Length: 117
Image 1 (cartoon, rainbow, N blue to C red):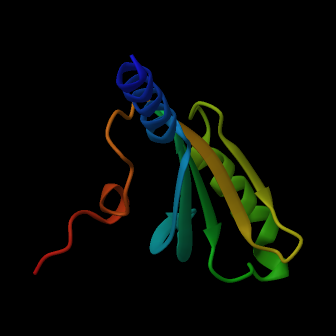
Image 2: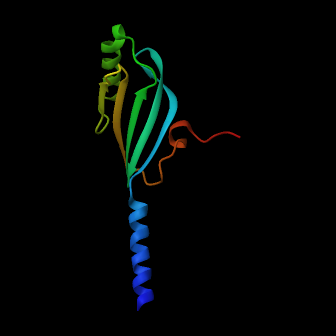
Image 3: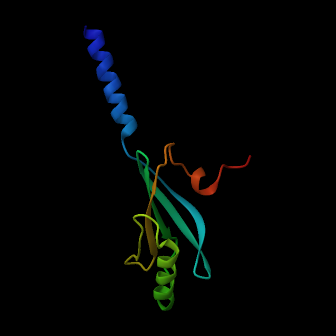
């Protein structure tokens, strides 16, 4: 009986560990926002089939271009479920949006594609 209880406890704890949210990144990449290609850092948090992506420009946007880049980013992410686009205090563009139905572990390969040997 003690073995059965220990086995059930182990299965329960391993199920909880597998269900825990998993974070990753940042992964350096590039995006075209408006007419400009910008370096971005992408990080994520996966909880079950939901992945929250956070995309932040690697460098602050020049102050004169912030409003136009912010509007272009809002248009780019418009209509994406749970999307939010804003400027950080440092002047970087930050976009957060949600992917749903992602059943396998989310990795950098999902953003950049698998590494070629």
